[in-house]
Image 1: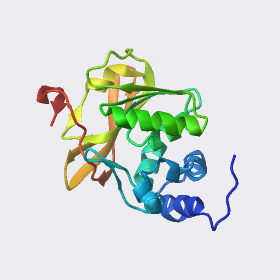
Image 2 (image 1 turned 180 degrees about the horizontal axis):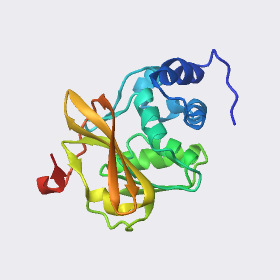
Image 3 (image 1 turned 30 degrees about the horizontal axis):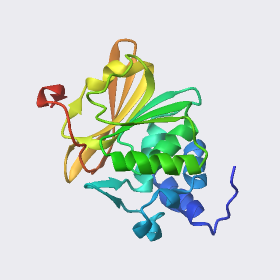
Image 4 (image 1 turned 45 degrees about the vertical axis):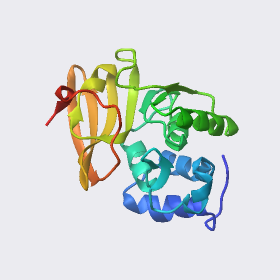
Length: 219
């Protein structure tokens, strides 16, 4: 594990920006602190790598604020044995966090450029428990009950139950639903054949693209 001082911007991000936003999970804080977030940020925005702001990635997509990334990771209570599905690879930083916390990550993105860049950056960090796929996760052939954790990193206009079938017993699904400027982060946990929603906090996040038909959504 990398040791950093309290003068390091990663330390400041973790303990002055993220922790005050009710993130107390030491595994999440250590992961956010020790992974080089700056290496996943587009070069033109490197100066904002640790700022409490979204960072443009192109194609209308963004890196989430570090505190939102951390709140998502904390809510998913990821265990070292977990199999994880990520919907929206983006910069690859959240992918790296998920891979560091869990056993293996399957990640989809519709933009080939994001997949190529993420693959390079993950390899540079020696992260090899990630399987990247260029395509739409909503139409992909995924194993039923195959994932302990599903992280949807873009917003949906309303809740979609499509990914519930892919949750293993005890599995957790994070997504942001609603319309800008006020959306809600939701955690869905599978208990047997029941899926229990926990409404976490309000936020705002750019929408996913290539969404399923509206009938998939519940309002």
